Image (cartoon, rainbow, N blue to C red; front, side, top):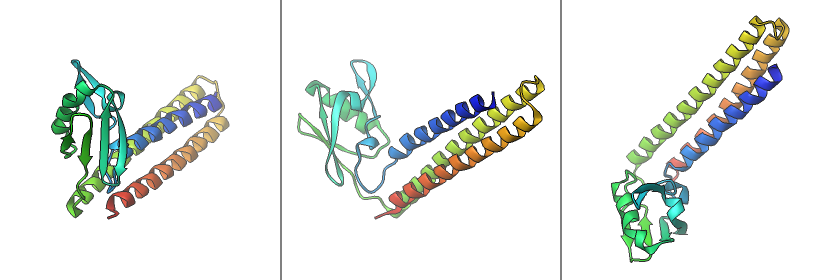
Length: 185
């Protein structure tokens, strides 16, 4: 019973880490990466569609992204999506591909991005703490229903806390790494 709860908890916490990785990948650093724009929603035939389903994204230079649509007629829709987004990127199109030049980040913008990173880290930590709280609640309910003993409950709570500490440590490490990337000139 406790082992099943622990396994489920570990999977849910790993899910929170995976979501955080995706969030952090979309935060801009000093260099270009396709993750910055691949989830950008483009209005394509009246449907919001992620850019990565409409085009191939490459990095020809360290500060440039190249978007090559699979359907050349969608290039105008892709340009509109960039102009409407809050990415601060101006699309340059030659009718076949869209080039996005990433301007260098100012010190103030870097600090703002670090604040965004810290907010994402806090969201992930809250998610992990909520998962821990739910698991401990389930364990206590199992003890109240006489499905587990007091000792098993105590051991289970300790294991959940160890897992929580391990996951929050990973989150902290990921945050420091991303902060270093953002502040790097």
